[in-house]
Length: 386
Ligand SMILES: *Cc1c(COP(=O)(O)O)cnc(C)c1O
Image (cartoon, rainbow, N blue to C red; front, side):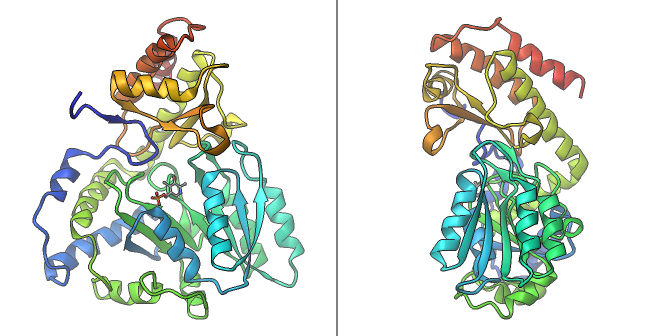
């Protein structure tokens, strides 16, 4: 049905009407006083969201651009880095590191299983020559619905003393705590179409003082992504190049909404949505990809399709019959799992509706091994006790 689309995706995520209306405003000059005032407000709110006193730089880019900015500003060709890989986005980091000629050591666990914190610790402890320049991590691994324990790994990096901690926070920022300063994270990259509740188009790279300092010596080439240029301009309330002015209007609105809700409330809402989704799918006899369940990401839940049933058929019914869009499995998980996003502008109502329609879609594709209404009831029980 026209205009009825409901995005239960881990990005792009639904956008509130007030942010959409902000996008429709006429653009203003990006060197104007009015625009500087907006940029200063959003920069302050971005620091709040990242729980940091450092700068959060804004790029007109998708999240991957913000990640690339994070790499090229603080590293030099041939630098040794550790890359945590347990899903598609960890692989992206490692591929990027290879592309830029870094000496990338993959620290892998199976897709669905969180990083092994001890492996990172022992590799860092063994590096007495301090050859490891960065530890590159994905906080919420969107391809599998796993939240990695980056807080613990960052502690080992701190103890190492030389390496920087570089984090993909794309589906953790705005969904779960990312305490940049307290945990000692040096780079946190994210993108607007996830927890920020606005369309794709902006990338954010938060940069610690230490990373800014390291950036002065780093030799990988950069121009558009230069931290130095971005930081100098931000200090004057402007940007080096023409920013996506209208996207920044929308960002101003969505950050104000987030501030009004409050960080703790945002995180507990996501935790509840995740718990309700998990309870719902389990009540249907379906299994989660994440192992153990305590490592589930509050942003997205990856679910094994019932034995013998193509996950994309389930997704197809959800989409065609109910206009609900869910995400597919990637690579070897294609057709095996489906992923339900519950990130950003998502409320309990959306999760209950997804559970009800999922029951119906499963029926349609021939899986009937559950009591009608059980997913809705299980999810509703979680939400009622929240
Ligand atoms: C969405 C996402 C990205 C960024 O993807 P873009 O398409 O470049 O915005 C990176 N990492 C994770 C974990 C993501 O979920």
